[in-house]
Length: 195
Ligand code: 2AM
Image (cartoon, rainbow, N blue to C red; front, side, top):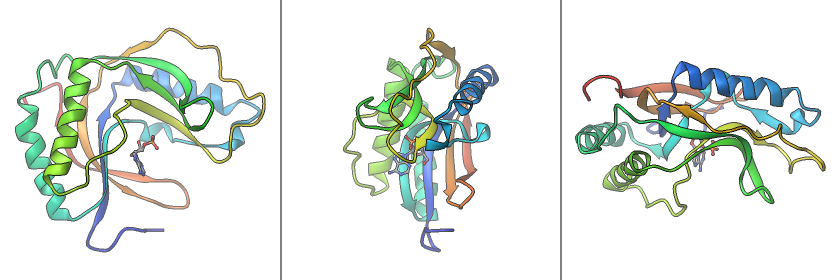
């Protein structure tokens, strides 16, 4: 089921995570999927785990090109990118435990992450998109709640946060299908090599 207009693509910019981080997140997923209430959640496939910097929605291919160009220029101004590391919590109900939408691991804010989110936003308005109204809250979604969480649903005991080292920033195309979203990388900026 493709809902975008033929001339547009549904896109978002995200941080890709290192293998150790993906192992930790996959272990959370396995544990959560064994919970008695697990069917109340649409779980994210382990291959699709990411931290969104900016959801762009439906944009034209030319806008995607302009977005990539603006990012390329802006990324050279972001300090400490190759050393970017994030302290990420265990699974939590997000955005509010009283009215959750997803189960996600939350990234503690730091100067580099904030600079990246600000850049992603500035580039989005620069290609003509409306400004994002919600404040940026870095999180890695593990599952989306189909219904409110069942009474008594508790998440596994919270652990100390884990340090994660994102490997890249990728602009993804997202295609919706009954079997879940299919993400295709349109452009990747590695954080490990020269940008
Ligand atoms: P979420 O995980 O909190 O749902 C691809 O859908 C990515 O873009 C997801 O990480 C999703 O965040 C994020 N996103 C942000 N706003 C969105 C929106 N309005 N519709 C779909 N995805 C959105």
